[in-house]
Amino acid sequence: MQILLVEDESKVARFIRQGLEAEGYQVEIASDGAAGEMKGKTGSFDLILLDVLLPEKDGFQVLQSLRKGGVRTPVLMLTARSDTPSIVQGLDLGADDYLSKPFVFRELLARVRSLLRRENRSQILLKMADLQLNTVTHKATRNGFPIELTSREYEVLEFLLRHPATLLTRRQLAKDIWGFDFDPGTNIVDVYMSHLRKKIDYGFKKQLLHTERGKGYFLSEKASLPKLK
Ligand code: CA
Image 1: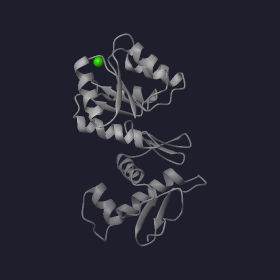
Image 2: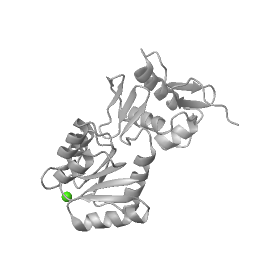
Image 3: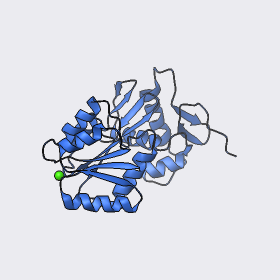
């Protein structure tokens, strides 16, 4: 696996390279934005780690240029600016994930592995069929149409999207989302699921949120779950 690291601080770059090489990755360093852009455009990398504050061209400009040039290599932005606007800007330009500096190396490694492994690479944009949820801006769309969600509905939908095609019992949902032990007398989970179903499925041919009668719910492109062996 070949990783391009675009980072101008040589100490940081060396630290990251050593760590990644110890894990068996091959790392090439570009120490300014222009060099990063040039190397990135060769398309010969499996992943690009891209710092935001760089001389010559900043990380956003580099990213924009790569995406415009058709380079689809996954990009993990390394940003000291953890504020939402700059992250959102990076995402709009086509970044796949971001990590705020300073970070622990283990966390970087986890993101790297995840981006190299996953086919649906974005950790920020959760998707199922034409349903999309942005975990930074909390905006949801179905077939490009915006869906207005309350903050609780957002939490429920994010949880469902992070556990695709998995049966989630009412008890589990109540505990993980509302943080309480399940009271069989309450129908709060069902009420939220019903609201959410109206918002994400109503008017669309393919239903994504399904009820497993007497058990719970699952989010899937298929109307039934694979039988357990
Ligand atoms: Ca920098």
